[in-house]
Length: 231
Image (cartoon, rainbow, N blue to C red; front, side):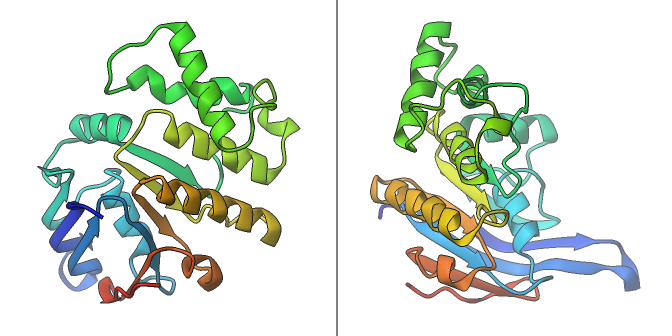
């Protein structure tokens, strides 16, 4: 593990004002190293989703700082945050978020349209998307649409899409929430393999047996970090 990829200092997210104010995150400090696989866990209302939205540059903190890859992104506007997301973050969501009428190949190609490596030719995008699908064991499903695949296969397409742009960070938000036990383990096995290859992964999960397979568990309660053990 190298330098910190994520550095959060005194981070707060407050919804509402005055007596109605809700501190979803309360002066949180958190560091995640480059190449770490971290599971973020905690009860409902602990701040997991709010933290995920800020780490994924989907939202901004009310107070405090968030450094991603050496850049302070906490004060960026919506357009600047969108550019950071497109270039530096790969997302894997519980609901897959695939385009239903597009093939697996075309779904995986999408982030390449916003690549931080500059515009690529159609043949280059095709090859990179095929390689990403191969890496998650779906090289033979490139022409299948989501309704022709199982939930586990759809989530593997989503992981390939998250990988194709070579992002700094992979954010996995309850990636096994819609899957059975066997498919859930397959997805976590893929994430573990990606970690072994040097990827930085932050996974939000409420499943203790899945969280324990990460390199480190960060436990939240009431918007604060209460434990950050090695697993």
